[in-house]
Length: 371
Image: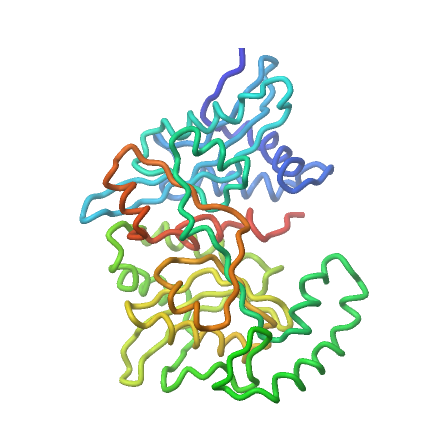
Protein backbone atom coordinates (compact mmCIF):
# COMPACT_ATOMS: atom_id res chain seq x y z
CA UNK A 1 0.00 0.00 0.00
CA UNK A 2 1.30 3.48 -0.88
CA UNK A 3 2.14 5.84 1.99
CA UNK A 4 2.73 9.54 2.58
CA UNK A 5 5.55 10.46 4.93
CA UNK A 6 8.00 13.24 5.74
CA UNK A 7 10.81 13.97 3.31
CA UNK A 8 14.15 12.43 4.21
CA UNK A 9 17.61 13.20 2.91
CA UNK A 10 17.74 9.90 1.05
CA UNK A 11 14.65 10.92 -0.95
CA UNK A 12 16.26 14.03 -2.46
CA UNK A 13 17.79 12.45 -5.61
CA UNK A 14 14.41 10.95 -6.52
CA UNK A 15 12.60 14.22 -5.79
CA UNK A 16 15.13 16.22 -7.83
CA UNK A 17 14.76 13.84 -10.78
CA UNK A 18 10.99 14.15 -10.56
CA UNK A 19 11.31 17.95 -10.47
CA UNK A 20 13.50 17.73 -13.58
CA UNK A 21 10.98 15.58 -15.47
CA UNK A 22 7.64 16.95 -14.29
CA UNK A 23 8.19 20.68 -13.74
CA UNK A 24 11.21 21.45 -15.91
CA UNK A 25 10.23 18.89 -18.59
CA UNK A 26 13.83 17.77 -18.95
CA UNK A 27 14.71 14.14 -19.71
CA UNK A 28 18.21 14.31 -18.30
CA UNK A 29 19.10 13.26 -14.77
CA UNK A 30 18.98 16.01 -12.18
CA UNK A 31 22.41 17.56 -11.53
CA UNK A 32 24.01 17.25 -8.12
CA UNK A 33 23.66 21.01 -7.62
CA UNK A 34 19.85 20.71 -7.76
CA UNK A 35 19.88 17.91 -5.18
CA UNK A 36 22.12 20.01 -2.94
CA UNK A 37 19.90 23.06 -3.25
CA UNK A 38 16.76 21.07 -2.44
CA UNK A 39 18.50 19.91 0.73
CA UNK A 40 19.27 23.52 1.63
CA UNK A 41 15.76 24.70 0.76
CA UNK A 42 13.60 21.91 2.19
CA UNK A 43 15.68 20.40 5.00
CA UNK A 44 18.32 22.87 6.19
CA UNK A 45 16.60 26.27 5.96
CA UNK A 46 16.02 28.14 9.25
CA UNK A 47 12.65 27.08 10.66
CA UNK A 48 12.49 23.77 8.78
CA UNK A 49 12.06 20.48 10.54
CA UNK A 50 10.18 19.64 13.72
CA UNK A 51 6.53 18.95 12.90
CA UNK A 52 6.36 20.95 9.65
CA UNK A 53 8.03 18.97 6.90
CA UNK A 54 7.88 18.45 3.17
CA UNK A 55 6.07 15.26 2.20
CA UNK A 56 6.64 12.44 -0.26
CA UNK A 57 4.24 9.89 -1.73
CA UNK A 58 5.82 6.42 -1.81
CA UNK A 59 4.44 3.64 -4.03
CA UNK A 60 3.98 0.01 -2.98
CA UNK A 61 7.39 -0.81 -4.47
CA UNK A 62 9.08 1.84 -2.30
CA UNK A 63 9.58 4.32 -5.13
CA UNK A 64 8.93 8.04 -4.52
CA UNK A 65 6.19 9.06 -6.97
CA UNK A 66 4.91 12.33 -5.49
CA UNK A 67 6.14 15.32 -3.55
CA UNK A 68 4.88 18.50 -1.93
CA UNK A 69 7.52 20.95 -0.78
CA UNK A 70 6.89 22.88 2.43
CA UNK A 71 8.68 26.03 3.48
CA UNK A 72 7.94 27.63 6.86
CA UNK A 73 6.99 31.30 7.12
CA UNK A 74 6.62 32.77 10.64
CA UNK A 75 3.84 35.37 10.79
CA UNK A 76 2.15 37.65 13.26
CA UNK A 77 -1.53 38.57 13.50
CA UNK A 78 -2.41 41.40 15.88
CA UNK A 79 0.51 40.41 18.09
CA UNK A 80 -0.26 36.68 17.91
CA UNK A 81 2.59 34.46 16.68
CA UNK A 82 1.65 32.08 13.87
CA UNK A 83 3.22 29.68 11.42
CA UNK A 84 2.39 29.58 7.74
CA UNK A 85 3.44 26.73 5.46
CA UNK A 86 4.22 27.70 1.88
CA UNK A 87 3.39 24.95 -0.59
CA UNK A 88 5.89 24.60 -3.44
CA UNK A 89 6.63 21.99 -6.10
CA UNK A 90 3.45 19.92 -5.80
CA UNK A 91 4.06 17.12 -8.30
CA UNK A 92 3.05 13.53 -8.96
CA UNK A 93 4.11 10.86 -11.44
CA UNK A 94 2.28 7.71 -12.56
CA UNK A 95 -1.21 9.19 -12.29
CA UNK A 96 -2.69 6.11 -13.92
CA UNK A 97 -1.51 3.87 -11.08
CA UNK A 98 -2.75 6.16 -8.31
CA UNK A 99 -4.97 8.98 -9.66
CA UNK A 100 -5.65 10.29 -6.15
CA UNK A 101 -2.01 10.63 -5.12
CA UNK A 102 -1.95 14.40 -5.70
CA UNK A 103 -5.13 14.97 -3.72
CA UNK A 104 -3.86 12.79 -0.87
CA UNK A 105 -0.54 14.65 -0.77
CA UNK A 106 -2.24 18.04 -0.69
CA UNK A 107 -4.69 16.93 2.00
CA UNK A 108 -1.85 15.60 4.16
CA UNK A 109 -0.10 18.96 3.80
CA UNK A 110 -3.25 20.96 4.63
CA UNK A 111 -3.90 18.74 7.66
CA UNK A 112 -0.55 19.76 9.13
CA UNK A 113 -0.06 21.81 12.31
CA UNK A 114 0.38 25.16 10.52
CA UNK A 115 -2.08 28.01 11.08
CA UNK A 116 -2.06 29.06 7.41
CA UNK A 117 -1.28 27.19 4.20
CA UNK A 118 -0.76 28.97 0.91
CA UNK A 119 0.86 28.92 -2.51
CA UNK A 120 1.45 31.76 -4.97
CA UNK A 121 2.22 29.44 -7.91
CA UNK A 122 -0.88 27.25 -8.17
CA UNK A 123 -1.78 26.19 -11.72
CA UNK A 124 -5.30 25.31 -12.85
CA UNK A 125 -5.02 21.68 -11.71
CA UNK A 126 -3.68 22.67 -8.30
CA UNK A 127 -6.40 25.29 -7.86
CA UNK A 128 -9.09 22.62 -8.36
CA UNK A 129 -7.46 20.43 -5.72
CA UNK A 130 -7.16 23.32 -3.26
CA UNK A 131 -10.76 24.46 -3.64
CA UNK A 132 -12.08 20.91 -3.25
CA UNK A 133 -10.25 20.81 0.07
CA UNK A 134 -11.77 24.14 1.19
CA UNK A 135 -8.94 26.28 -0.02
CA UNK A 136 -9.71 29.78 -1.29
CA UNK A 137 -8.34 31.61 -4.33
CA UNK A 138 -7.24 35.20 -3.66
CA UNK A 139 -7.77 36.91 -7.05
CA UNK A 140 -6.39 40.24 -5.79
CA UNK A 141 -3.04 38.50 -5.13
CA UNK A 142 -3.10 36.35 -8.29
CA UNK A 143 -2.01 38.80 -10.98
CA UNK A 144 1.36 39.44 -12.56
CA UNK A 145 1.99 42.98 -13.76
CA UNK A 146 4.07 44.16 -16.72
CA UNK A 147 5.42 47.59 -17.65
CA UNK A 148 6.97 48.06 -21.12
CA UNK A 149 9.84 50.55 -21.14
CA UNK A 150 11.84 49.91 -24.33
CA UNK A 151 9.33 48.30 -26.73
CA UNK A 152 11.67 46.83 -29.37
CA UNK A 153 14.06 45.31 -26.83
CA UNK A 154 11.08 44.15 -24.78
CA UNK A 155 9.66 42.16 -27.71
CA UNK A 156 13.05 40.64 -28.50
CA UNK A 157 13.62 39.63 -24.89
CA UNK A 158 10.38 37.64 -24.98
CA UNK A 159 11.70 35.48 -27.81
CA UNK A 160 15.47 35.56 -27.30
CA UNK A 161 15.52 32.23 -25.46
CA UNK A 162 13.87 30.52 -28.43
CA UNK A 163 15.32 32.38 -31.42
CA UNK A 164 18.99 32.96 -32.14
CA UNK A 165 17.92 35.45 -34.83
CA UNK A 166 16.25 37.61 -32.17
CA UNK A 167 19.58 38.08 -30.39
CA UNK A 168 21.17 39.20 -33.65
CA UNK A 169 18.57 41.95 -33.95
CA UNK A 170 19.46 43.52 -30.60
CA UNK A 171 21.51 46.43 -32.05
CA UNK A 172 18.63 47.40 -34.33
CA UNK A 173 16.14 47.17 -31.46
CA UNK A 174 18.27 49.45 -29.31
CA UNK A 175 18.46 52.05 -32.05
CA UNK A 176 14.69 51.93 -32.54
CA UNK A 177 14.12 52.34 -28.81
CA UNK A 178 16.50 55.30 -28.53
CA UNK A 179 14.68 57.10 -31.34
CA UNK A 180 11.19 56.21 -30.09
CA UNK A 181 11.75 57.04 -26.41
CA UNK A 182 13.68 60.25 -27.15
CA UNK A 183 10.50 61.68 -28.66
CA UNK A 184 8.60 61.24 -25.39
CA UNK A 185 8.50 63.69 -22.48
CA UNK A 186 8.75 62.62 -18.83
CA UNK A 187 5.16 63.76 -18.21
CA UNK A 188 3.88 61.60 -21.07
CA UNK A 189 2.66 58.11 -20.23
CA UNK A 190 2.38 55.51 -22.96
CA UNK A 191 1.64 51.82 -22.81
CA UNK A 192 4.51 51.19 -25.22
CA UNK A 193 7.43 52.87 -23.47
CA UNK A 194 9.03 55.31 -21.04
CA UNK A 195 10.76 58.56 -21.89
CA UNK A 196 14.55 58.63 -21.97
CA UNK A 197 14.57 60.91 -18.91
CA UNK A 198 12.23 58.62 -16.99
CA UNK A 199 8.64 58.56 -15.80
CA UNK A 200 9.01 61.72 -13.71
CA UNK A 201 9.03 61.00 -9.97
CA UNK A 202 9.37 64.61 -8.86
CA UNK A 203 11.60 65.40 -5.91
CA UNK A 204 11.61 61.84 -4.55
CA UNK A 205 15.09 60.37 -4.40
CA UNK A 206 16.48 56.86 -4.79
CA UNK A 207 19.57 55.36 -3.22
CA UNK A 208 20.94 51.88 -3.87
CA UNK A 209 21.42 49.96 -0.63
CA UNK A 210 22.69 46.53 0.41
CA UNK A 211 20.57 43.54 1.37
CA UNK A 212 21.06 44.09 5.13
CA UNK A 213 19.76 47.66 4.93
CA UNK A 214 16.83 46.49 2.81
CA UNK A 215 16.03 43.80 5.38
CA UNK A 216 15.78 46.42 8.12
CA UNK A 217 13.19 48.35 6.08
CA UNK A 218 10.80 45.43 5.72
CA UNK A 219 9.25 45.59 9.19
CA UNK A 220 8.33 49.32 9.18
CA UNK A 221 7.01 49.12 5.62
CA UNK A 222 4.78 46.11 6.37
CA UNK A 223 3.44 47.32 9.74
CA UNK A 224 0.21 48.43 8.02
CA UNK A 225 -0.81 44.78 7.49
CA UNK A 226 -2.61 43.01 10.34
CA UNK A 227 -1.27 39.66 9.08
CA UNK A 228 2.37 39.83 8.04
CA UNK A 229 5.67 37.93 8.11
CA UNK A 230 7.71 37.85 11.30
CA UNK A 231 11.11 36.66 10.10
CA UNK A 232 14.09 36.24 12.34
CA UNK A 233 17.34 37.84 11.15
CA UNK A 234 18.72 34.41 10.17
CA UNK A 235 15.62 33.53 8.15
CA UNK A 236 15.61 36.81 6.25
CA UNK A 237 19.35 36.54 5.59
CA UNK A 238 18.80 33.03 4.22
CA UNK A 239 16.05 34.29 1.89
CA UNK A 240 18.02 37.25 0.55
CA UNK A 241 21.14 35.13 0.07
CA UNK A 242 19.21 32.68 -2.10
CA UNK A 243 17.43 35.47 -3.95
CA UNK A 244 20.75 36.99 -5.04
CA UNK A 245 21.91 33.74 -6.67
CA UNK A 246 19.96 33.97 -9.92
CA UNK A 247 22.51 35.08 -12.52
CA UNK A 248 20.18 34.37 -15.44
CA UNK A 249 17.88 37.14 -14.18
CA UNK A 250 20.66 39.67 -13.68
CA UNK A 251 21.90 41.59 -10.66
CA UNK A 252 19.55 41.86 -7.69
CA UNK A 253 19.36 45.58 -6.93
CA UNK A 254 18.02 47.02 -3.67
CA UNK A 255 16.84 50.64 -3.63
CA UNK A 256 15.46 52.91 -0.91
CA UNK A 257 13.08 55.78 -1.77
CA UNK A 258 13.02 59.01 0.25
CA UNK A 259 10.58 61.92 0.14
CA UNK A 260 11.56 65.55 -0.60
CA UNK A 261 12.01 66.09 3.15
CA UNK A 262 14.25 63.04 3.52
CA UNK A 263 11.77 60.55 5.00
CA UNK A 264 12.01 56.91 3.91
CA UNK A 265 8.72 56.18 2.13
CA UNK A 266 9.47 52.93 0.34
CA UNK A 267 11.93 50.50 -1.15
CA UNK A 268 12.12 47.95 -3.93
CA UNK A 269 14.22 45.02 -5.07
CA UNK A 270 14.45 43.85 -8.66
CA UNK A 271 16.69 41.91 -11.02
CA UNK A 272 18.35 44.16 -13.58
CA UNK A 273 19.96 43.04 -16.82
CA UNK A 274 20.48 45.56 -19.58
CA UNK A 275 18.06 45.20 -22.53
CA UNK A 276 16.18 42.40 -20.73
CA UNK A 277 12.91 42.32 -18.76
CA UNK A 278 13.61 43.05 -15.10
CA UNK A 279 11.92 40.82 -12.54
CA UNK A 280 10.62 42.73 -9.52
CA UNK A 281 11.04 40.73 -6.34
CA UNK A 282 9.44 43.17 -3.90
CA UNK A 283 7.94 46.65 -3.65
CA UNK A 284 7.47 48.22 -0.21
CA UNK A 285 5.65 51.50 0.36
CA UNK A 286 4.07 53.46 3.17
CA UNK A 287 0.30 54.06 2.80
CA UNK A 288 -0.31 56.77 0.23
CA UNK A 289 3.21 56.60 -1.21
CA UNK A 290 2.90 53.65 -3.60
CA UNK A 291 2.62 55.82 -6.71
CA UNK A 292 5.84 57.68 -6.05
CA UNK A 293 7.69 54.47 -5.20
CA UNK A 294 6.51 52.82 -8.43
CA UNK A 295 7.58 55.88 -10.46
CA UNK A 296 11.01 55.69 -8.83
CA UNK A 297 11.23 51.97 -9.67
CA UNK A 298 10.39 52.64 -13.33
CA UNK A 299 12.94 55.46 -13.56
CA UNK A 300 15.65 53.46 -11.84
CA UNK A 301 15.13 50.46 -14.11
CA UNK A 302 15.02 52.69 -17.21
CA UNK A 303 18.35 54.27 -16.22
CA UNK A 304 19.86 50.77 -16.04
CA UNK A 305 18.66 50.02 -19.57
CA UNK A 306 16.03 47.45 -18.60
CA UNK A 307 13.52 46.85 -21.42
CA UNK A 308 10.55 46.25 -19.13
CA UNK A 309 9.49 45.20 -15.66
CA UNK A 310 7.45 42.27 -14.43
CA UNK A 311 6.34 41.41 -10.93
CA UNK A 312 3.64 39.92 -8.71
CA UNK A 313 0.81 42.17 -7.60
CA UNK A 314 -0.08 43.21 -4.08
CA UNK A 315 -3.50 44.79 -3.52
CA UNK A 316 -1.96 47.77 -1.68
CA UNK A 317 -0.19 48.73 -4.93
CA UNK A 318 -3.04 48.12 -7.36
CA UNK A 319 -4.70 51.55 -7.30
CA UNK A 320 -1.39 53.33 -7.92
CA UNK A 321 -0.53 50.95 -10.77
CA UNK A 322 -3.80 51.53 -12.62
CA UNK A 323 -2.79 55.00 -13.73
CA UNK A 324 0.75 54.15 -14.78
CA UNK A 325 0.27 52.19 -18.02
CA UNK A 326 0.84 48.86 -16.33
CA UNK A 327 -0.76 45.74 -17.81
CA UNK A 328 -1.94 42.74 -15.81
CA UNK A 329 -2.07 39.04 -16.63
CA UNK A 330 -2.83 35.79 -14.85
CA UNK A 331 -0.02 33.24 -14.83
CA UNK A 332 -0.67 31.41 -11.56
CA UNK A 333 -3.06 31.76 -8.65
CA UNK A 334 -2.46 32.55 -5.00
CA UNK A 335 -4.47 30.09 -2.92
CA UNK A 336 -4.84 29.92 0.85
CA UNK A 337 -6.27 27.60 3.47
CA UNK A 338 -6.85 28.08 7.18
CA UNK A 339 -9.06 26.50 9.80
CA UNK A 340 -9.25 29.89 11.57
CA UNK A 341 -12.05 32.01 10.02
CA UNK A 342 -10.51 35.22 11.39
CA UNK A 343 -7.26 34.57 9.53
CA UNK A 344 -9.13 33.60 6.39
CA UNK A 345 -11.14 36.85 6.52
CA UNK A 346 -7.94 38.87 6.87
CA UNK A 347 -6.55 37.23 3.75
CA UNK A 348 -9.77 37.62 1.76
CA UNK A 349 -9.91 41.32 2.70
CA UNK A 350 -6.31 42.00 1.60
CA UNK A 351 -5.00 42.60 5.11
CA UNK A 352 -2.11 40.17 4.60
CA UNK A 353 1.35 40.76 3.17
CA UNK A 354 1.89 37.93 0.67
CA UNK A 355 3.87 37.21 -2.52
CA UNK A 356 7.46 38.09 -3.31
CA UNK A 357 9.64 37.57 -0.26
CA UNK A 358 6.58 36.24 1.58
CA UNK A 359 6.23 33.47 -0.96
CA UNK A 360 8.37 31.46 -3.36
CA UNK A 361 9.74 33.96 -5.89
CA UNK A 362 13.05 34.31 -4.05
CA UNK A 363 13.78 30.60 -4.29
CA UNK A 364 16.40 29.40 -6.76
CA UNK A 365 13.89 26.76 -7.86
CA UNK A 366 12.17 29.62 -9.72
CA UNK A 367 14.25 31.35 -12.36
CA UNK A 368 17.58 29.54 -11.86
CA UNK A 369 19.40 26.89 -13.82
CA UNK A 370 21.34 24.07 -12.21
CA UNK A 371 24.27 22.33 -13.83
